[in-house]
Image (tube, rainbow, N blue to C red; front, side, top):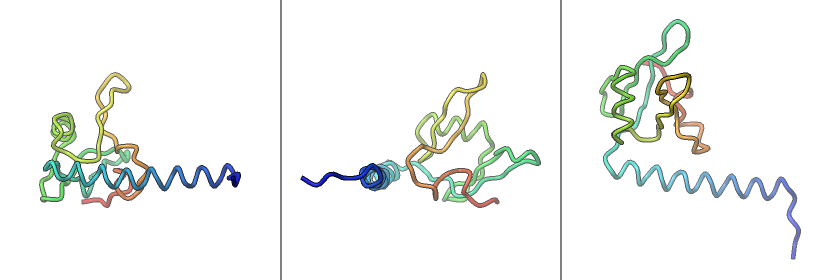
Length: 104
């Protein structure tokens, strides 16, 4: 049996994760959840609004509520700093991270 290096094992793990993330993304979109395609930031570089693939523009609070109800794909709501925070799902794919999306 061939012994794999730590790097090989980790690369295989990452590839499996990327594949699984793509499968789960497709399943999530099949439920009708909308994907966020652009973001708006304030002068402090905080995310303040989101644009969906259908062209809807959501303020932060509306996006939080829609994410909580499963209407937005690839985002999670977590509780931090004493409040709810919208963040990208930690799926290993950079292209759908909120921080990587273009501005509108």
